[in-house]
Length: 122
Image (cartoon, rainbow, N blue to C red; front, side, top):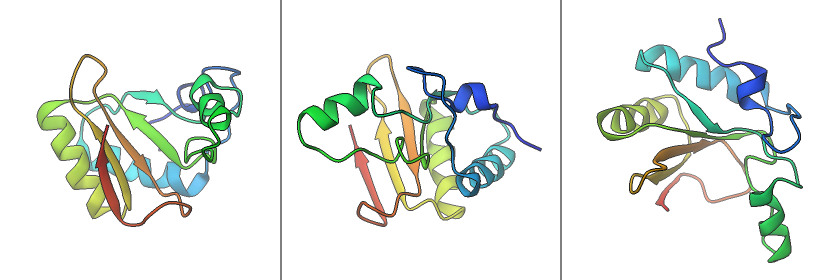
């Protein structure tokens, strides 16, 4: 069973879906264990997506979202903490935390091009 649709994981810029099956499998396991919805605020992002385009413009490498192995989940408070705990149990090696302001989210990725394991805040 998949808790996520191609539409919610597709690029919001162009609608393209390019998401790694391995990562989708892990996300579904995490969702099952969490027992609550994991609203995707950012899934795959093409090179023209504003966030990825800004990276290119400043000479930074494209990120996990562009490779289809990164996702941002809109959660806060207790659900954010549980998501991080469950993601760690499922071997997610890279976690970003944004828990301030209105646009709170947890970033999860299995990218092999960045430091592993690591956790950071935005």
